[in-house]
Image (cartoon, rainbow, N blue to C red; front, side, top):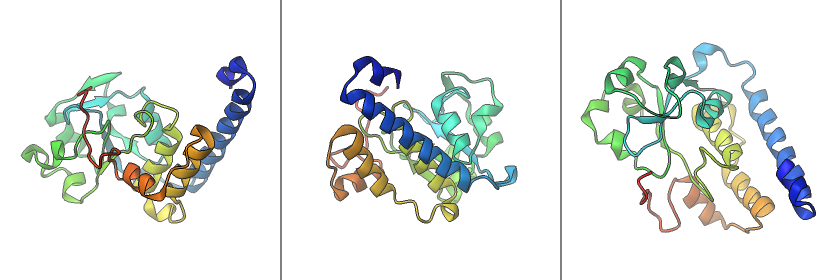
Length: 204
């Protein structure tokens, strides 16, 4: 809101609309998860990249969003902060049930590494890639889309009516003024870039 008020004019109205949207969607997710028991929160690990043992610490956006989405973010059991390295031994102890791969890195950094083959998320096919849009979803205004994406992946039975394609298309139209096509939304939500590939050329 402060940015919008500083810029004034249409920016102030758009900032209010964005804030209202965030409040509505946070409430939507939280209401669906209100009766979730601690034992129903899957142990979840986020890969920040460029390698599978680099994550974001417990005070970063992704940790808060994950908890809000119904995850037990395993990194919160550690002292890790900011961009952090963990050991494969620590991963084995945590044994995450769900893994999210962010920043346009390939899930192959887990799926093709034999050290991960007995991790529950791998054996159960619950390694998911996170979409990225105008910026990385773990660190930008599209984090409200990430919250909904995480919640549906973590608890699909609680969000059968959540249409992430429609949410994404509406978000881009309302806040970026871009009329995203359904095929573009599908590409984005599958974790791929406009070229149909998933790669981080900056290796950041």
